[in-house]
Image (tube, rainbow, N blue to C red; front, side):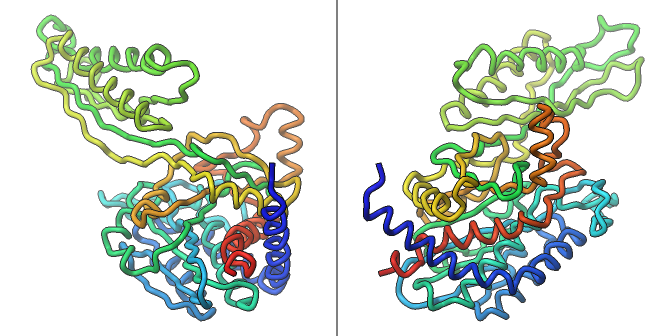
Length: 434
């Protein structure tokens, strides 16, 4: 049950947000141009120089104190507007090695050279161009309506979320000394829901993700003489089959987890038994107990299969990447959910548990402060409704990381800017700051 004081504060915050967001009309065209520009010119992790400069320039134009190059390409903008809470909003900037197939007039044709000298296509296949644009819009609105709020607003543009390196890089580079300590950290992600949708979730929201490379060793031989070998391909195949039992037989049916072997490499021809096989796998879990249990099971099974096959060497395990679980704090999530309900009405929802992963929570973790992270939709509402009517959402609606994923410009941007602004004002609005 909501108290009268809570209802009054939420209503007041919504009124303040509507006043501030009235200024969005004058910014809309410029924000749409910025979004199309960022989409056309994506940059991979830790190489977001152009994107970071766009964000830094926009902040300076609005009167922010700007620090660039944090953790490589990270940007921090600080706007102090009297005494009051400190709110940090984070947006990620990097793109993915995906060739765009959206057919949009502003589609990316960019390529980069990877560490091995190979040319790779690059695309904003995850929507980080939306995130950057929406934070620029929110930052500008707050700068232009300082009479409506009190406190300090921190806009943080983070590099390299996709490989889980960006938040850690900013922290190592002195983030906590180069930014005011926030009272709360806020962030959002565009997902394949109808544009106009906003969704909050208290507690577990995004999974932890651990990617491993496992090398199993055998003894090579002629393909016609398997008795002279210890076949690592057979070991790898046995490992893959046995790993399927971890989730289905070692976890309760009510405990969500995913274990996927996404890559196997072994051998160079059909008539040669190789001396090693390499597997790459990904584990998704939602709490530390399950995470430890699944990862321990992976190692136990790999070692057991190698021992059963008389492998001549112990298997090798390499952690490729690791993302923490995103577990939203209860109080800030409640506050944002109430503010969204008052402002967005029926478009405010509780979002489902997601199997995607993020490194955003490392930033509030470094400061020791609470956070909340929510979803906005980016799919044309009519297209989504038609797919839902036919029961073909999974087949017809492109998801993040797809070469066809491209949020519609509107109402995605208006919703994203509005959500960030409404959420920030739930702390900074005059009724909160008093």
